[in-house]
Amino acid sequence: MSPDDFHNKPFDEGTLTKLHIFELYAREWFPVFLAPERPLRNAIHVFDFFAGPGTDTQNTPGSPLRLLRQLQEFRSAQGWGKVRIHVHFYDEDSDKVARLKINIASHGFQLPNVSFDIQALRFDDAFRASELVLGNSQAAKLVFIDQTGVAHVTPDVFRKLVNSPTCDFLFFLSSSTLHRFRDHPAIWQKIDRPEDYFHVHRAALEYYRALLPPGQEYYLAPFSIKKGANIYGLIFGSAHPLGIDKFLEVAWRKDEFSGEADFPIDRENIRPEQLLLPMTEVQASKITAFESELENLLRSRRLSSEVDVMKVCFEHGVKRQHARAVLAKLKKEGVIDIDFYVPDVKRFREPRPIRMRK
Image 1 (cartoon, rainbow, N blue to C red):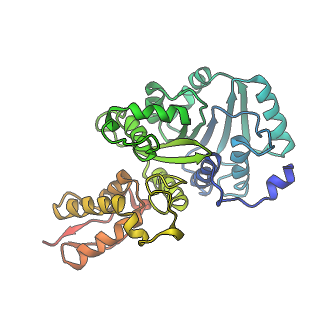
Image 2 (spheres, rainbow, N blue to C red; image 1 turned 30 degrees about the vertical axis):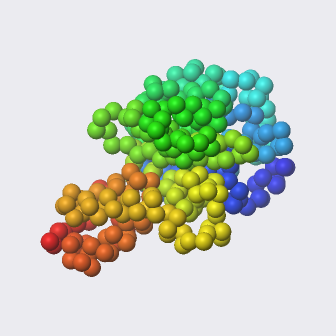
Image 3 (spheres, rainbow, N blue to C red; image 1 turned 90 degrees about the vertical axis):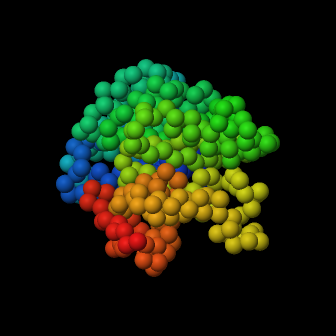
């Protein structure tokens, strides 16, 4: 693929790879900080800790070029020029780093107002060198860790990411790493067959969720991608409701069943067009569980505003729109009085109340 082909090719949302989902999220993330006339932060930092050479052996663009392609789209945004943009690309292979620099130049991605930090560093060294920036409360950060084989996101690394202010992250677990979650105590009693990806996938999420400090409000969501015989697990993290909201929008666009995978992770290899039952019945285990808990919480008066409803949505990995049916039902029954049917994430700081009637 030539540089012109890459620039002119329309973004393909139909074919999903782990790079696509990262690019999809980057496309949602950049305008949050670059679109406003008065930017929310004075600097943004984007990290790719396993950047590679920029293209694979088939000359398909890798994560650094995809990231820069999305960043390039916002050169005319109101915040461009008002926000200092820093791109950090690391890889332990110096030859790959040299080729990456050539690829960035040949594709015309040496963007104005963008500071490039491209170094040959092992993950441990690169992450250690980045800790000061990650801890900067005045800067927004997006972190991508496409680890290969070895699980570099240790509990210590995970906690540092979680405690980094205004920092969203995506990291992938390789097929072999994800396979090890089959021995996780939380799923010993649940896995009946080796191909039961459903429980392994969720066990990975629960493992990382258990690493969160008690009482810390933080949002995590999983997504799994199947490539050949291999399964790659993605873990997304954000401390802000807007971050998890945007990720769930991306995830549910790619998986209309459960927002969790690009393959039938627990659906016996069926797709929407192959259903014998309505999709609502196939979705039942996840959506019904969410609706049941939301209704119980509302009837027991434990939710007081649309923010509380949003949090229940995010904990279940569903979109805000999934709350509509329960809210409409309880309003019709006279249980609650509300001015909304879908919580608005932009009202997070000034939410509309839920008034109890019965």
